[in-house]
Image 1: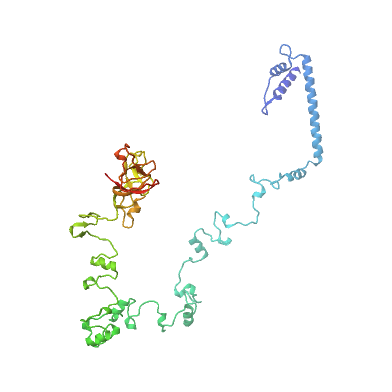
Image 2: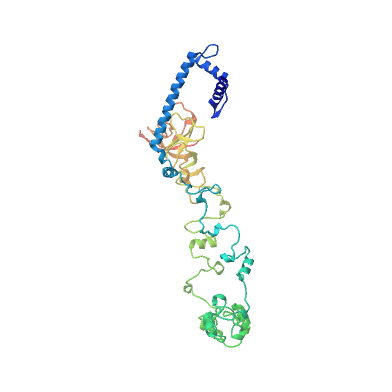
Length: 482
């Protein structure tokens, strides 16, 4: 008996524990050892008091578990009494949650009833993807068009018939017929003319009438004339071909076979005749006829090599007296003497370094690295001359074209400086004839040198050739140049 209990206890313990839901065997020694590890014991074996205490705890836990199960069972019975726990009641409870789909029939081949068609149903042509419809079911009984036509006793879409096969009806125009068995109606249907008919000229819009039909045999006028042996509308004849009659004036003739009458008809003069000057009222006499070849004076002078009285441009060297004295087209002049009764000095354009006015004494600007000239004052060391506006000759500057004024082109960049001769000069203080003129402390204005004054020759402007006792700034004539 004791052995049986031990065996039952051992089996109970082995089946009591599980790992991941699978029962795992455990020996009694493992059980008691685990027990002792948890609650303690003597020599690895629980005492009676420990056993009773643990048993009491386990018993209390089991009672609480039985009470919970009883409560759950009572709650389940209240929700769905045992007497109502039928298949129909379960189905009704599950329907609102959509859990009864496919449950109206048993499964067939693992599929619900909705996966199968009704006994009576239809298919679209696209649903038929295999097999062949028989003639009895409205098909052709074949998958090849030739065999299908053979089964149906049908002809190909494109086929022909001999005329003998057509034994009734009338071919419509759309099928290449006339649409009528009556020739007049057939022509009417086709818009055709009778075999014998006429056309107006306006109806002929293609082709070419042959000569035999009253045409020209060509659509090209030159070829047509060639075919007809005709001349062009506009044509000419040589004089030898005109062997009778007289060409009228309106046809380019003279209207007469007599030259005097012909001239009379044409209003023409004899070959040899003269004119009074008053008869010449248009045109221009060429030089070859003793004229000038121009209707204008300048053109006439140019044609005959004459200079107009109003002036002009020579296009060659002009000599005076003989070829030793001339002016050529490069502007070079060669004379034995040159006279100018009004103007007084010889001047040159000097590079401008500032504003000046006629009469200003001009000096080299020694503070500049480039050559330029300014108004002179007591500090200037190198006098160049005087700004002149009455020079007899002016050289230097930049070239001016025929459309430019030489003075206006250069006055902005250069100063016309008198280098020799007499020139009106700005001075201040009393001046006596013969006084040496030196720069004053007024820029551009000179003064008379004092007696016994020491000065450099490079600072001398010139000497006065006239005098007055005025003390203001004015212009007096000074002789410049050394």
